Length: 342
Image (cartoon, rainbow, N blue to C red):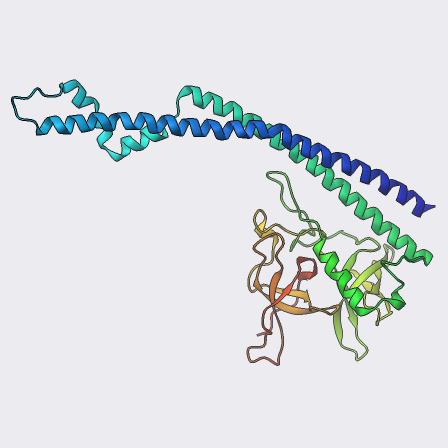
């Protein structure tokens, strides 16, 4: 029944999302005329400025010619000569070109006010669309967990015992690519679990959330693995998590300090660089084509929203103790609380 209810709600949300996409296009078409007016107004201003700036040049040429005439020849009136003096200085010429008449100032103010309102209206529609997408993804995740509990699987996600490693790696890459980018309103600060910003102290990961979990390996050594939350007990303050790797087939009961929630949003380097790990900062990063986290140094933070981190993994087989730079998505880079090795 829960699966049917989720499917019905997802269908409704997809219809609403389609309507919002249409509204976005209509809003853009409506505001296009105003943007064209802004461009044409600037073009007219430039044309008029060029025309007006050429007039002092003509007068100056006449003044210069009059100074070269014989004394017997009539001189240019002093009033005309004085009027062209300001045009001889670069500063005054610059002022002439940058002058905006009251008419154009008023017109541009109105056009830009309208453009700002249009942009805000479009932005509001896009935010509503992003909210719908987030709700759809949440329902899909809930449906996946419900199917997992019920023992029902679809072709896109077979049972854990039959999932090939190549399929798992592809799913991990898709999860990293589809991690939503945090887009806040002007003045908003990135929330916890955006990029490098850690979860709040009282945060509890939900069933289905992916985390970095510190577990004991078969040989007794401890390692950080990629895991999925099964449940959390408020009585014991412990998580039950599944090893994401098919070959593990293990469930672990771990305390909160052995769990690090993964980011739920990508940080935008262009607007929120403070929400990213910085160069030479120590982190735990998922080693490419594995499901284990290892200590690494940030080599280069992302420069654009779609970029990955470039990291240097600790590796004693190299002379300097670090591997060559490797790319790791924001989704799989978390803070390392252990001290940096000397």
